[in-house]
Image: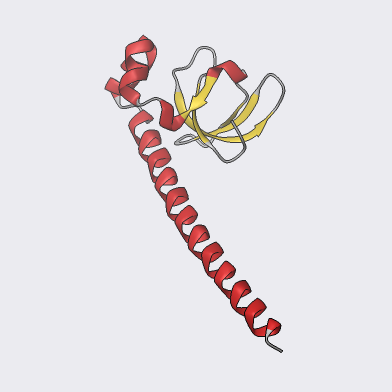
Length: 117
């Protein structure tokens, strides 16, 4: 995991919750939880990539998560917020790729022009 990545994080006594990784330490990860905007520091072993596991899989593994998901106590909204963040990140990555390709074309064109002088 790296800073900026989306993840599912688990704090003892609470269900799995969508979060954004803020920093990775040797044995813990600093995360910002979606929905609540609270900071947490779960163990590295209690953080998994958001894309690697959906809510259904977590509900099958964790009864507390399943109960929270069924009750709709903010978890559904937090999941939606994380999914929207993932979509924004994907769109940003597409823009960055396009700008990088355009910059390469400009550098090649400049090199060609300067080489002809």
